[in-house]
Image 1 (tube, rainbow, N blue to C red):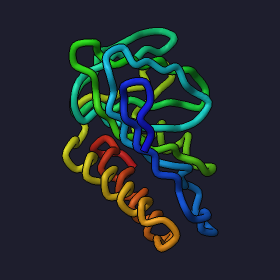
Image 2 (cartoon, one colour):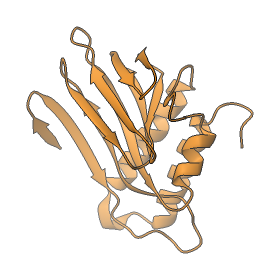
Image 3 (cartoon, one colour):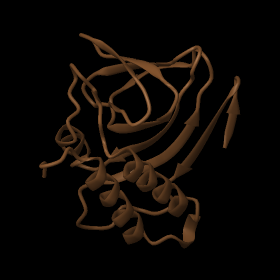
Image 4 (cartoon, helix red, strand yellow):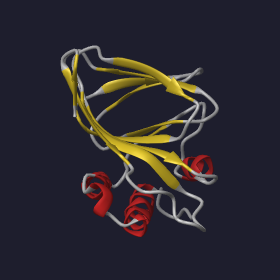
Length: 166
């Protein structure tokens, strides 16, 4: 857990190696409790986020959108995404840093594009639970099986996927 400059950021690194035969894996997952005006500009990797509370602005190179509870946005490997907490209603969000050869493809299948790296109207409760379950397992450290992590990761992808996809 990091307490930095007025906000809390719980980060859970993956404690085990990627199992053989899998094309999707993760570096880490986390839970950020924002503060007014907290802003980032990131890209070059695949990292879906779910907004659980509060609001913020997400910007791509061509557009921007105010997002709130139940919305998702994603850092993508081919662009920079700017995101900033609302000054009056800072957000809380979960995220997972995906790796592996399928990471970028999975994010695209989830509906994220460079022009619009966000989605509204996801299955928020199920997706939030899947993020929390993944963090709980990662928090177990060396005692967690890599196959349990795979199961949690694919459960997260399944509930965050637009209906009718995959």
